[in-house]
Structures are given as structure tokens and as C-alpha cells.
Length: 466
Ligand SMILES: [Zn+2]
Image (cartoon, rainbow, N blue to C red):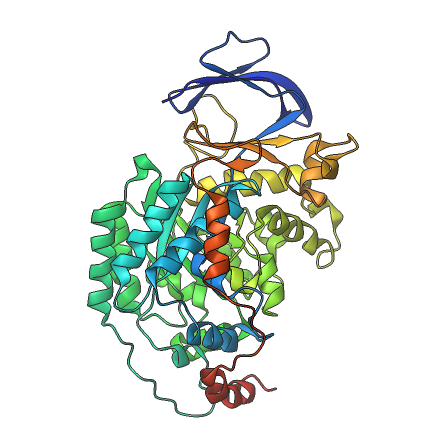
């Protein structure tokens, strides 16, 4: 492990900034103060801002292959198109995991929660290759294999009609066995690789699957992750399925906890909000994808006022269509200034930074180890170049970073004290080769037709009253 000292770097303190030295010893922050003795290598922090790394707290890496081409559709139809053209080769999963990691790092993230779509029949291979990609890059990885045990059409409310759905191609028990095997093979928190239990959501999962996930989470001390009430259709479906809200149901079956992160949370009522607060669940705000798919605007300021922990995610690149964490943080902050007139609750740039760093750590049950610049915490750090044109002229560095349109501002990144970005370049993998591979394995495309969308669209329109 390389020890180092960052000298004369700007850090945020209460409502001001200070110029300090930061010592990193054995992967952890050993001291923060002006004029410290040098330990190990010297890093020049002059005219640079040091922040704790952000969490890209919800994404689906393999969606990178379809970014830019997905039709303009709401989630339920969009998903049908997505799955009609999903990548089926593990080499693609490898490359898109690398790409997701690189884009996350270069926009301030040091951790990624990959709600990983599994290739049917190659489930463990998919998890293995994504793990390999994240280990090679060196980003802290939270791999949340996306599981369900109902077929896609079950995710749309039935309305008046009686609908039967094809059984899912894999049994609930077989799915749970895959997750348990993934935990045995790949869950190594000390090495920066974590497996999560991650049923995709109430829309496509039975209670048996949730129960199995809860049991694995308790037995192996795993965090829990799921989509929650992303769309109005899911709100309707929960009423059809359970006769209560999805949040009430998840509480009843015991899925909600202080290590449960819930992506989207757009369609919750006030009683649901109380339940999330009470169970100390974390909301992952994915503003770009909620806008892109017309899902709605999550009531984030209400969550914050209720004391719910909130952090940010890019969501998959097919509904974003990027993995720029700083962009998600910006939009996810200022979006609410139009929905909530009381400006005293609006999210400030400093609050946004805390949500993106500490909020992510807290949701993943790592608040004591990550998420802030504190002595004793692990060194997951990002150094921003304040002489970059997009961060000039010199005003408030965090204001410029969150509210501006920063480009190529990340100078260095460390994860667990290991440097993986230097001089604005990822040092662990060859990004030029990655670009070449992504280029070679794709083609310019404008027209493709999803057969599944054609099959289900009429029903979707009827049941949604369109
Ligand atoms: Zn998602």
C-alpha cells in the first residue's frame, strides 16, 4: 500500500474552505491539517479541491450498448424494447462495465452500484465478468445482480381484463441459488467488491423471491437494493397485486431497512414517506432517467424534510443516456426548485455534495468507513482541478462544480488509497483500447423495431387511459 501526502489542497469546512495537507496511510485518512510532515509520496494539491468520492448509487452497466437509440417511450414499453435488444455476450458486459466505471470516475464517483442485468443461462458468468471489469479499473463496486421471477408482461397493470402471464424462464429457487453462489465467489468487501440482493421491484417479483433475498441479506450481511414506484403504472399495479401501496407491502414483508437502497421512489404518498423514514431506508434519486422516461419528479424535498437519507444515481445509460454523475447531481438538485415553492428547503450545492458522498455511504451501510473527509475513513478521494476553464473564474468551487457544467475537471482519484486516475486519465486500464472496442463492436443505427412493444402497446394505452 502506497502512503502519500496531498499538500496545500482546498477542502470544504463548515461553510468555508481551508487549505490543508492530507496524509494517507495504509489506505485511510491519517491526518488533515496545515503544514503536516510529509509521509510517502507528495501530491501537489495547489489550486485543487479535494472531496470524498461520490456514489453512482443506481445504474445498469450493460445498458451502455443501447444509449442514444432507445425510442421515446415510458418505462413499461421502453423496457420491452430494451430487452428485445439486450446484449447477450459476456464480452459486451465486460466492456460496458469498464465504460460505466470510467465515466463514473471521471465525473467524481468512486463507487458504483451496478444493478446488473444477467444474461439468461450465463448468470454467474455475467457477474464474474462485471466483477473482473471493476477490479481491473479499481472502482469500488457494489454488484447488485438484477433478479425477478415473473415475466415482463406481469409488470403492467391488468385493469379490467383478466391477464395470464407466461411463467418466468427460471424458478425462484434457482435464482436464489445463483445469488448465493455469487456471494460465495465474489463478495469481498475488504477488496472493494460487494454483492447485493437486488430483486428488480414489486412489479416483477413474487413475495417468495423477496423473502429469499431478505434471508440471504441477513445471513451474509448483504445490502438490499430495488427499484420502487418508478411509474404511475407501478402504483396501480401494487394496488391490484396487494390492495395496498408497494411501500406498505414491502414494510409488511420486511424488505425495508437501514441498508436498503430504493431507486426512483417517484409515486409515494405521505404515509409511504413516513414508512421510509421509520425504516431508515435510503432513496436513490435518478432525475435524468425519470425525465427521459416521463416517470415523474420524485418528491425529494419532502423526503429530506422527513429525515430520509437521499443519494444520487445515473440509472442505466439507456435511460440517461450517459453516466455523468455531476450532471445527475446538478439536475437532481435544481429540479425541485420548480416543484417546491419554499426555497428554504431547496438543495444547496454543499448539501448536494454531502448527499452524493455521505448519503451513498450511509445507504450502503458504510457511513463509518466512507463518504466524508474524516480521519480514520478509507481514502476514496477525488481531486478537482480548479484551473480548468469550466471552473473559472474563481468564485465558490463547490458552486461551480455542482451548478456549472464542469468538463474534464477530475485530476486524480484514489479508491482505498490506491490512485486510479492521475492527470485526468485512468491509469489502471487502457481507455483508448476500450474506445476502440466499443467502436468496433457497434454500428451507426437509426431504425430498429421492437416486436414486444408492438404486442403490448395497445393494452398499455388502454389500462393507462391513453
Ligand atoms: Zn434502474
